[in-house]
Length: 275
Image (cartoon, rainbow, N blue to C red; front, side, top):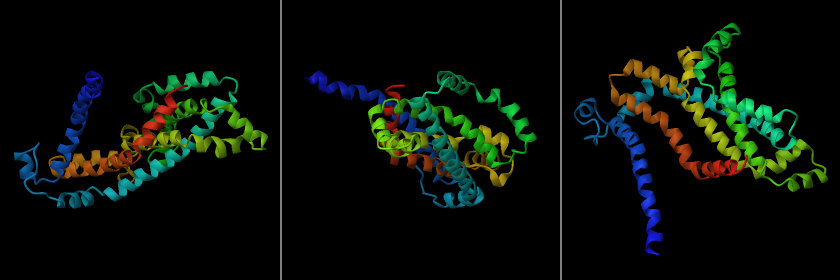
């Protein structure tokens, strides 16, 4: 009995070390954001001697954080909305309607989602320039939707195939259309998977750097990750301000995950049991 009780605590030891390994850089970033430049030079990994909260005010103003955060939030909401709508419809079609060639579509999406971004970003750059989509949010959102849709379709389809068909058939017998079955019956049942997809897509878009760096050159239109890189190029010698901006960039991500972490993990588990 003693061995059985002690086993979970022993298994948790590696998880504790991994958690500390992941948390430590964030803790150092937060501590450095509250130091003076002199304090940071003398003590780069320890606690600040004096908490310089003014670093955040200076960093917020000099980085034009409000503008770039607004840009990213627009991209996040637009991309998440489109991915959930298109991904939900595609997943429902592949899971329930099963049109001809659906297996080929799944294989195609799987293969295309494994291709590295740099394999096709250069041709896309020239194509986007020809059609006038450079420095254009529509062109950026179009790519974000394309990059995130395969994951959304795979996860939502994996969950939808687990829902008993009897529920759907009962709704159809009551006179519900296919669209009504999806929106009024299946959607409420599978909302945790939709929430998980929305969270993952939101985090991907918020943290995305490469595509925005190549396609957006207008400083006023830069999303948060790209603007942070530009801020580092200008204020790279002042690590206190750079750390403060870094904390502000990751703070929404951390808050989002902590608020929805239970639903996030539940949605992943539900969508990965069968597919």
